[in-house]
Image 1 (cartoon, rainbow, N blue to C red):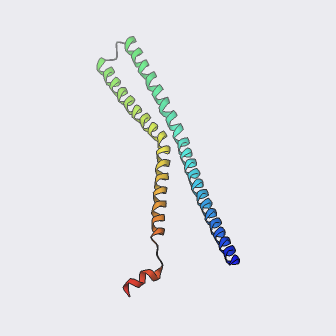
Image 2 (cartoon, helix red, strand yellow):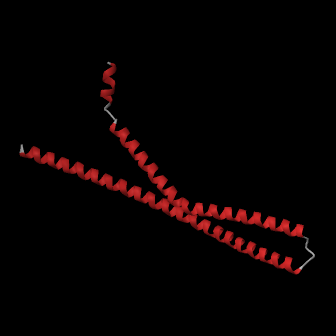
Image 3 (cartoon, helix red, strand yellow):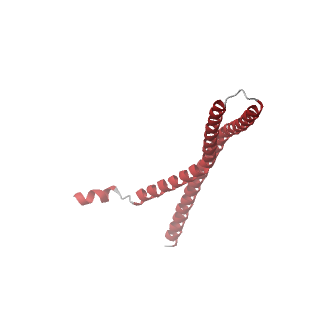
Length: 148
């Protein structure tokens, strides 16, 4: 009886240690996946940074062009008011597009956090679905017995 209890305790301890090792391994895999996703998002942000700098430089150039046109308008009477109005209208359109681009870049800057949260939620959903499938498993003989 004592040997049986000892063997039963050792089997239980062995199974528990195997489950703990499996859980630690799965946790390590999840952490590694999250780290790789974070690194990928960081790389994408580094790609977007020069684009944002370029948009900001373009905005500064448009502002300087607007100042030059205002100065030209004050200095010269040769440029017709219709031409100046058309140029100013086009500059305003360019500024509006530039503002839209800056808004899009801001959205991209916030995208990694949203995408990472979405990836974590999706992984959690998949884990729940997998656990549900495993929980619903029954031995093959139990499935075959109702038909006989």
